[in-house]
Each structure stands twice: as C-alpha cells, then as structure tokens.
Image 1 (cartoon, rainbow, N blue to C red):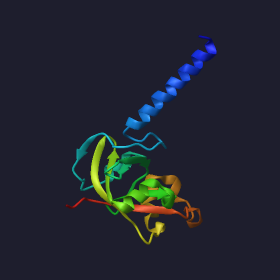
Image 2 (cartoon, helix red, strand yellow):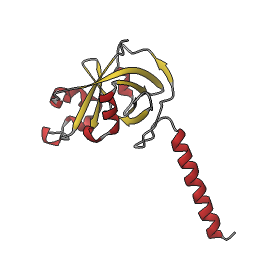
Image 3 (tube, rainbow, N blue to C red):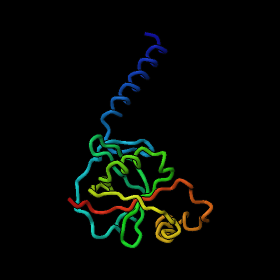
Image 4 (cartoon, one colour):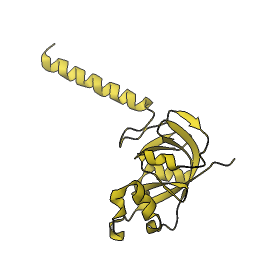
Length: 159
C-alpha cells in the first residue's frame, strides 16, 4: 500500500473512531455538547458559593435522551443562576422549556434540580453578582448585553 493510501486509511479510521466516540460520549467538551453527565450525585446544596471555584459547569437536559452543554453560572442572593446567550436558538434551553428537570455537574459533583426561566429579565439586577465572579462583565454597559440573553434560576426538585 502506498504512503498516500496508508495516510487516507489512517484518517478514515480516526474519523470512524471519533464518530463512534461521539455516539457514546457523556460529558460535554468545551463547545461540543455531550449526553448523560457522569459523576456521583450529591444532595441539593443549601449554599451554592462553592460554584464560584469553577468558571464553567455542565448542565444536562432532556432526561429521556440526555443532552449536556458547558455553560457559565453565578450565585445571586444565595440562588444559582445559569445564563444562555442566544437562548432562543439553543437546543438545551428548548429542552428546559419542555421539561425543567436538569442535572448540573459542578466539578465532579452532580446535582439534580429544576431550571426556571427568569421572566421578565432585568440583567442589571444581577450585574454585581455576575461581575463578582466574572469581573470583565462588571463594567459592561446595558448596551453590551446580548439581546437574546436568557437566564435560568436553579431550584430544588420537589416530587
């Protein structure tokens, strides 16, 4: 087999393995969505301040066919919030509207919760809390806030 054919066969094999890996992956990787989050489940916390140790978290939606993504989070008045820039265009936000049951992965811990969309959204109400975790966002003017920003309040599952 010539060198070019070996290279092509090798690349085809890598593409096939990557495709098979995609089918069975769990956690999201950077901007690539995942499926069922892996990790040990912990009780819903009384205090979410530990989430400030993580710049991003993973959120899993659509319990029947799990879909997970990497996103930001911040704590405001003791409650965890998860924003979604371009919320109307994201698949995971639509899944939350259909079924608010979510699983959050913060570090290596999993938390079962529900996500409620904050409406109407006045992002200026959250500016100090968001800015304390993500300092670059603190100095943004209201004109710099994305028009299609959605925000979800995380609550404990009851029932």
